[in-house]
Amino acid sequence: MFSRWLRIARRDWRDWLTFLAFVGPNLSLFAIFTYYPMVQNSVLALSDYNLITRSGPFVGLRNFETVFGSSQFGKIIVNTFVFTTVSVVLLIVLGLLIALLLNQNLRGRNAARSILFSPTILAGAAIAIVWIYIFDPRFGFIYTILKPLGIPAPKWLTDPAWAMPAIIIVYVWKNLGYAAVIFIAGLQAIPRELYEAARVDGARAWERFWYVTLPGLSPVVFFLTVTTILSSFQAFDIIDVMTEGGPVNATNTLIFHLYELFFQASSPSRAAVVANLLFVLMLIVTALQVRYLERRVNYA
Amino acid sequence: MGMFAVVLIIGIPVAWVLSGALKTNREIFSTTPQLLPANPNFDNFIKAWQAAPFDRFYINSFITTLFGAGAEIIMAVTTAYALVFVRFPKRDWVFFLLLVALMVPDEVVLVPNYLTIASWKMVNTYPGIVLPGASIAFGAFLLRQYFRTIPLDLIDAARVDGAGHLRTLWHVVLPVAAPAVATTALLCITAKWGEYIWPLLITTTEDMRTLPVGISRLLDQEGNTEWGVVMAGTLFVTVPVMLIFLYAQRFVVDGIAAGAVKG
Image 1 (cartoon, each protein chain N blue to C red):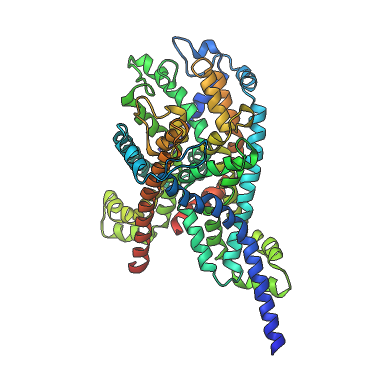
Image 2 (image 1 turned 90 degrees about the vertical axis):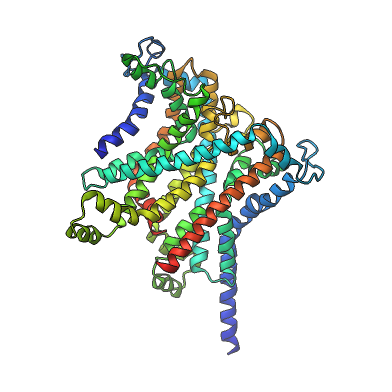
């Protein structure tokens, strides 16, 4: 009896050690580079941290006042909102459109899907550089095709009115394949019988789309909206390479502002204020997603 | 229709890069620019290689991707295995901790991590580039989902035969889960290879830059005067990843689609 108990205990003990050995390195790194920094972000934001002395006095909410009260901050919030909203809408609409076009059972569909997906995995910095050359108002692709037509090409990246559209085009181009791939999978998950039934009931093509396809895709639309919002908050490489937040802050977003405050203004404390704000925004989006998923599980 | 749209969307930028890289300066800066190069030649690739220390960029990108993505892949596999197959009293707590980590993007913890690496005197070193991004939550989740579909009988059979956890992982779980592991690995590798903001912050000298950061420096240096050279440089960055992707694309794209729809 006792020896059996001992044997089980020894086996448990070995399992626990294995568990810790398997999970420990990952969790330790998270402790140092994720959990602790979250605390550190709040400490930094509430103090006036000096990069040279590596310390700073507690200043309460003064950094928040400085960051939120700065003359460009309103512009940065509007830019972030515009960039995220327009990107999400374009990715959903164009992604769905392409998915519908590719969903017919034609040969080469999988190849087309993979080709379209490829920009997603390429380095954003390299893609941004290629697009600078495409947009170039004197030697670029757009200039080259517009010139024979007698249409002047916009000065995309140096004109405050065109810089944000340019950034959005590149961001959407990079992520379009991802959206399309997710939509194609969503389309294929809709049961064939629903379409058959609708057809038997005499539903026209657009009615089948409106009453069968769209409701069937609603979880996919939701998933893509959330993931795109979250990743658009992190879009840094394209903006840094193409415009550095300019011209005159036309493409300055929260993530770029964070970088700018830290590395150009050398103010880790004010950068931490922006980091906290970004995190809260992303947490709200994630919380909405979790609530939605729970509702689906409970009532579906 | 669909194929035509895809060809247009992807084909135009790709064709423009290739055409730019193969053109001479006279063609690029002509007052009547043409879409295609008249005399395609590879001079720009040679010039690009000489204009920036691309050999260093390659070595740096290779080392940081190897160790960064390598650590991620190994820890994603072990973490997922432990969460699914190893008994532990507080397994749910560990799962919750990972969930928290999943919700914190790298950009949010940029400043504290820079200060940590600086206090360890690791600015402008390989460990400084690799360490903060070496842990992995997303991949661990992806693999956990997949491992849960493996029949427990398979694991029990191996355990009864006296195989330890490491042997079970290596000889039973990995072969069964190969497509999922490969998908995770490819996503880790391509993400590390293209990583921009962290290597930009943490490297301070030209000889420590990775390819994406180095190529944007090349643009600052040569842009507007040497488009052909810059386009050749972007191909140095993108072609290796493109080749890996083309080799593995089928099941990778399937894996991503399945993960999203099954949720």
